[in-house]
Length: 76
Image 1 (cartoon, one colour):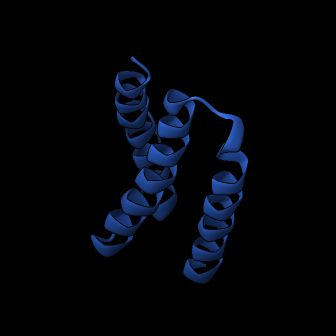
Image 2: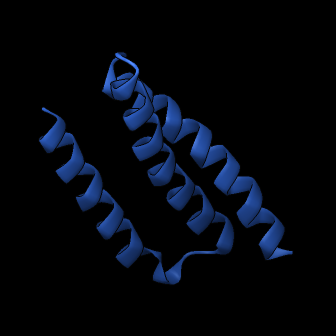
């Protein structure tokens, strides 16, 4: 199960990096933050005995919000 999650996250990250060419800084920040947050959240949850999917979902939301705010600052 962990291997499948790792491959899924890697595929999504690679796909999102290719898709970022015509995005604003805010959109790129949201997508990148969400991807990084999902990886970190899933890893922390799995390492501490929690549900990796729940950790990935929470991390993706948190990372997306932070990435959105940082990207918005870069647009101005």
